[in-house]
Image (cartoon, rainbow, N blue to C red; front, side):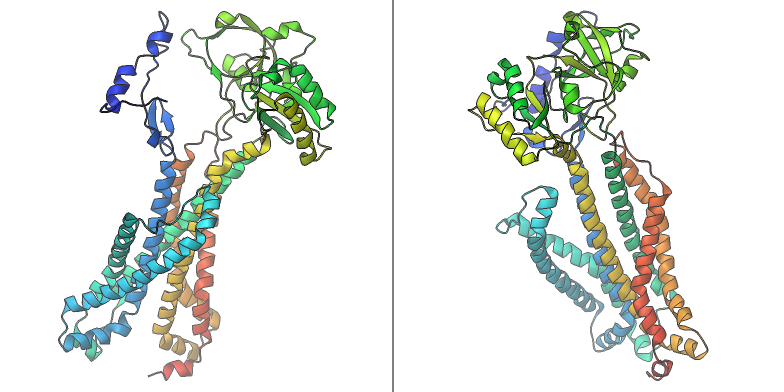
Length: 574
């Protein structure tokens, strides 16, 4: 971390230091293999723009910000669509009002202003209610998102943005009804010769399709997110992390008297095994290069993830030896030996690597004595890297402890803490459960899944409210038709099918539009995970079926109500 001097441009400073590392590490003839370049990156961008590819920033958490921002806008758009649909559906009831107002002198602009005013009143009331809802739901949101967000009540910019957003929403929601209703001809309305006709329902149908396209897309996306999480969680990790804890070494006494420290832990009876490493097993962060072996491509820029361990590491994590043997104190030569994982064996191009030799720069020749099953020591969403395990008792900084499964965790930790306090009295005993640390690797995806579920549920709820309102208006408009059909012998089932069919067709069209849209979005989202699920038709079919069932349940109330109505009452209504 560096602090810039005043009046110095970031890109200018980066250009000056670009080759600082190159001049120190490049050897003669390595110009093509090694070309490290340094650059400065502002700390203000670390949190949201933390992903790099080939030395260039390619995004990070900002992608989630844009994702949920876009979903929020779409959900708001669904509410606007509902307002437009219900306003235009009520056009016949308000047609006479428009006709009379125009007859007594109102101009079209006055009517437009009236309808926009109605829209702004509704949206303003919704803004006030939303502030209350946000305040009530923030504790839940902070728990899910692992944040500490609060409403900035005293921030002027917040209120300007809030009222500005309210104004834009009112314009969008009220635009179509204002322009549509104010265009009615008063003479035709008052004579009763003005009827909307079939074309008048087309905009409403288009808006319904848009609503459910967004909703079904969110349902599909949510399902795929949870499938990806389950897929990664069910991946074998290659070792046993149950009852495994680790603690960072903060006192030299533990290293200088390691054998005594380990014996004391065993004497407590709460520990099965103890081992030291240079990184936690859940997050190995050390990589090395400079290796050579028989058959290696001379132009290859090799890299291995490395973990320095003590003899008992394999027993502590219960790894699985697939070839060769584990480290042993009976073999003094193991100090110059490697144990590799399966990915490393493939990387080396060796079907039977045990007994083969690898040269590590000036460190000498190391013999491969064993191959272990691949262990997930980094991201569960990426392939396991080629890995070397090396015996080392000095350059280590983590104590790994396997708790006796017959002892409760609280009792075991109390006994372990006593030993730590004896060798490191100046520092508190701090530890991490390996299984909990591994579970945190799914935290970001779980948060995305939970928030996507909320958004999808909200979108479906808003869409169903719109469908319910439209179904009630359609049933009301077709009251006489339903009465005549029942008199002519139509059954309740036939009337229900007649009123439900149009909505089911619209939702089916939405599903057909949402499927390729969701496929494109989710395929791009999954592309960031090398270890990922495949997109199958099942999730798309399930989302479509879910949307159709929800629509039928929503429409059925109004359809069955119209089907059970007394035809005599409906035909005598005027």
